Image (cartoon, rainbow, N blue to C red):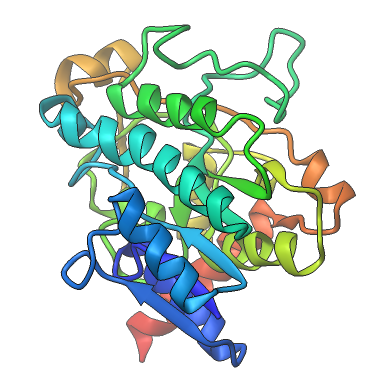
Amino acid sequence: MFFILGATGYLGSYFVKYLRQEGEDVFGLSRTEIDYTDVGSLISILRRKKPKFLINAAGYTGKPNVDACESDKAECLFGNAVFPGRIRTACEEVGIPWGHVSSGCIYSDRKSNGEGWSENDEPNFSFRNGPCSFYSGTKALGEEILKDAKDCYIWRLRIPFNEEKSPRNYLQKLLNYSSLLEAENSISHIDDYINSCLSSFTQECEPGIYNLTNSGSIRTRQVVEWMKEEGVTDKEFNFFENEEDFMAKAAITPRSNCVMDTSKAERNGIALRPVEEAVRDSLRKMREQVLA
């Protein structure tokens, strides 16, 4: 049995769907049934149900974007930093391996040598190395709290996307925004990400941090050109002059734009597809949905 915290959330629902399609027994914990943020309550249900693995897909991202975290800092700090520490305590007490949905948004740009950020690099977009968004600061703290955690996988996600019409889907966001910021990023196809997360456990990879983004990186202008090439839109996109213009007109807090090194996932056989392949595949499916 797989336990999933945040099973009704954006990513949690994908974990549930994927595991059930694979014929797995899934138990989604709801805070309306049990306060799983309480260590004692979580330990009690883990001992009673005895899952083989726990997935923490709960967290605080802010809606419609990370700007919302700036006005709800207490909830953001609890969901992204305090709560993962409580899960660690419970899982280590009962002896349950688990996985934690983390974020690559604790970095900015590339490393000084031009390479992407690896799992061993200290975050440079965090409270300790600011300025940063409050969201990114709490995600970095969450990883600090899980340092050296026993039997714990930390799965870093970045800018999720697929073909579905969702306000959380990066591709849909680009279509909806009136102006875009030109930036280079690593991004994560949701199905690829879910598969890689679960494969890290089923293939018995060594627990620890994994950058789970599609290999390579993309620039915003590349993606909108692919949208036109794949027949998704003929829209003429507007762009901010630069990041300063974006901050002045459209944002409250700085954004993380960065490139991740995925060589560890590749060495362990759990790498995601190349980014262009994954994006174009999603765009073709988006076009098919419009034509259907």
